[in-house]
Image (cartoon, rainbow, N blue to C red):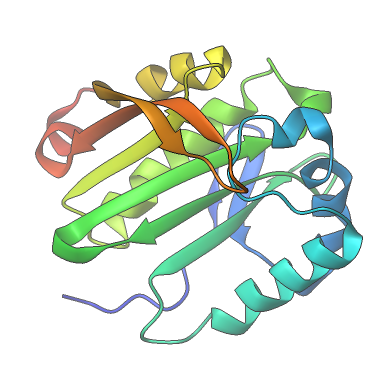
Length: 186
């Protein structure tokens, strides 16, 4: 298996999905600290310093051959500004968890689908995943629809999943195998 240390940038109709850069912390701070963004995620960053430290840690990991977490910026092509993010966490046995987020200012415009499709493709085609999965809080109707739209199939529900900082949520799990991904029509 080829060890991937840096993922290539992927262009979608509206976005460039690329590795996080140190300068992304300001754009990330704009949306990652908003209550509406944080409502459906486990890792909550409280302020600009938290976001800047997060981005610094992610950039420092790039190029490490032991790396198993890939955090990407979703850069709007027209604005040359990060308007969302995504991650791939490669686990044992070729399992890869993905997750996505979009600035609330742009919800409902298809950016999430572009991010999700990119993450699935990168996980299978560049990271070498055998299976890609995602967990979505049941209260996040838009991401539940998005998971299906990008080719993930609902597998199970967890009624009391630990969602960080002492919270428990109903979470839905979705997945797709490499075989199903590569056999899907265009």
